[in-house]
Length: 213
Ligand SMILES: C[S@@+](CC[C@H](N)C(=O)[O-])C[C@H]1O[C@@H](n2cnc3c(N)ncnc32)[C@H](O)[C@@H]1O
Image (cartoon, rainbow, N blue to C red):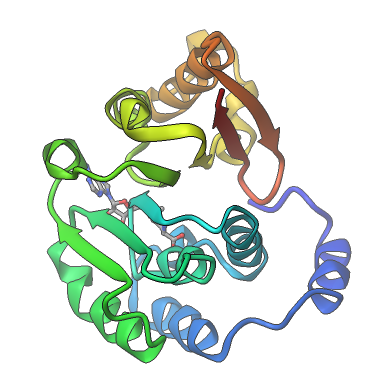
């Protein structure tokens, strides 16, 4: 769901940088071949992720939820020299397309893909992260936050996608489905966590940006 009127979004896109050629191809192939292409971040959110990353200049990035690799390629644009992005996806079927596009983007050696359940993989990663992007199964957002929090450097960022959940986040808690309730709980959890400062950025489906104090 887009919250901006289509003509306003089109104008914003027309007055922003064009989608990188490699991302354009990946976007198109994802829409042609995948059953849920709407999971891909897309041009406007992808540009914002690139800009956040370029502002932070992270040495280590963690992404939970790779899908076809679009947001990983965006986030990797801001890595410091010698930096590394770890990305995790549970679905083995995406491995081929992700690996091919990492190569096409010239990012081999800068992105490490882990296939498996993030809950099992996260404890094995030893880096301290400057930037974390949570974009996997909504029910586990709070678990991912608790697992990664100690591994985020002071002043580092955790960005969680889809926190508006197509507006369903406004439903009464009694009427929320499991995913909406999990996102509602996540938003509440970090708002009441004095260790972070937060802004809910209403781009696309909502990005919750938290900075570790
Ligand atoms: C919304 S998509 C990610 C989109 C991607 N970040 C982008 O912007 O292009 C969510 C992904 O999370 C993955 N996922 C779901 N549960 C997971 C889990 N427990 N561990 C790791 N990945 C998971 C799914 O397979 C799916 O590819």
